[in-house]
Length: 153
Length: 176
Image (tube, one colour):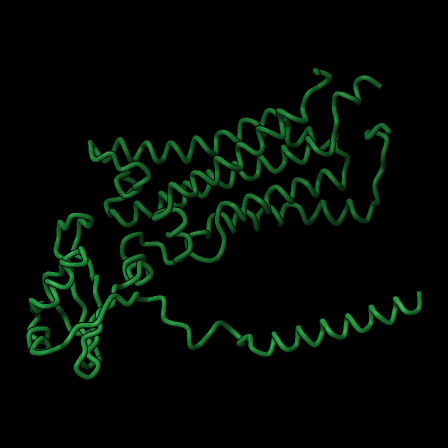
């Protein structure tokens, strides 16, 4: 069972080659419209991850690993959390002694306190989306592909 | 075997009948007679002359002492509910022990000779102040990411921990 020799159906490959960019665009839309309509970081991240999982299922897993390497997954999953915690720390620094952790209004994006809160919410949604996407892809790789066994054979 | 099938058929009919019997009582959407979640009832008070004091924007002494006895935050002024007769909102003052700003806290309704005292639920403040405070029109998002920011941070940490533990358990590469 060498995954590099497997060949999938031409129909499925062609259709998903066209569909995947649109799925990813929709995922970005869901993340960035979390503050205006339904959606948010968790849902957008899940949709983004599902587009990569579709790529891995349709083409083979070794090609998928080239597109989303393990190192990128590990980096992205912790980077999302760092963005979340970092925005919280920034607001703590800018609140100058009031120690308002995660009170985004103090970060000076604009001159309005309320607008700053809206922008802070957008930023942390991006962080949540990155973490959810990377973790879902990473779990999928670990469950679907035993790399160690393959090298022994 | 045939008898077993007949028993199963009877059981299915019985369970179906039970389901229809129970499902008849379920209303279409929610329970229209359920108490409103906008407020929690605290107690009743004999009205006396307090209606005039409430109409002038003051808080009657009997009400203040009743609240003090039950250790609730004390209101400083009253306001008529817009468009309603014999209903008032009571506000707790700025820099109260637990609230930094002036908050709409109690809802007083006069029914007959009784004053019914309610406390507003947090939902009401969420409805009225959410857009004003965060400039985000989606009520779910500003609750999730702003009012409950710590909670969402914790959820993200849980997902991260799940991913890391799957990596530790499955990505052994021949070790162990």
